[in-house]
Length: 161
Ligand code: FES
Ligand code: FES
Image 1 (cartoon, rainbow, N blue to C red):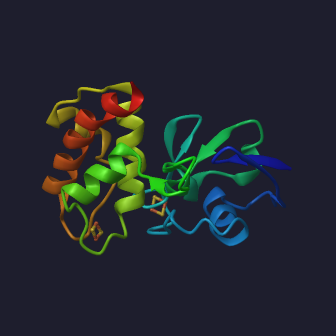
Image 2 (tube, rainbow, N blue to C red):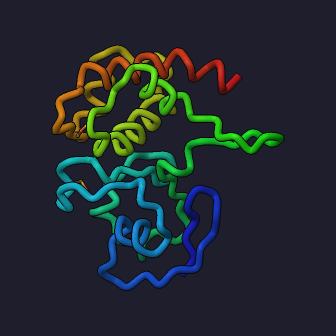
């Protein structure tokens, strides 16, 4: 089957029971998406499917034909001249707010943050916490994660404009 990941079409072998997470990590070598609980509880494996956040560990790869998948690797752009990466505002804000300790939850957190800001450019803390409630951070950096999403909301219009 064909699958669209980060704007690139791939022909992949999607066995019926294979998860999208396994396909991304093991076949496409996109290891930024993390395996945490494997049971839909931690959010480490969050990707965007047609712009909406989804648990890739709970998503059958075989059902992804015709959908657009975005992973953490697909967020940054590249400068046309220098080819230097230009981080997505949410990535930039996580760095600026020093929102990661071990960093294992960070890709999933960022994907949930991107999904939120794509819908709501001015979320209050309650909206941020609600959007991120399915993402677990074992290091407990929640206040800095919320601060990063708040900061990213300020960066977003500057980039989109
Ligand atoms: S690994 Fe998918 S939700 Fe935890
Ligand atoms: S920074 Fe370690 S799990 Fe979140």
